[in-house]
Length: 72
Image (cartoon, rainbow, N blue to C red):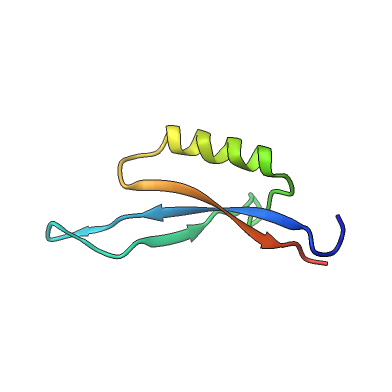
């Protein structure tokens, strides 16, 4: 990867309900099996994973993609 490239992280956004009132979103960054933040170097596989996670998620949980500058 060249300096300045973008990698992709998947975040889980959960809407929480307290006393029937929607609270602010809770955001969690997915990690790999080693406890490190999961970073996917290519857009297409990242989009496919987000689509799969959204198809299989519970109500109130959505997965989104965000681009971050790759570490040099």
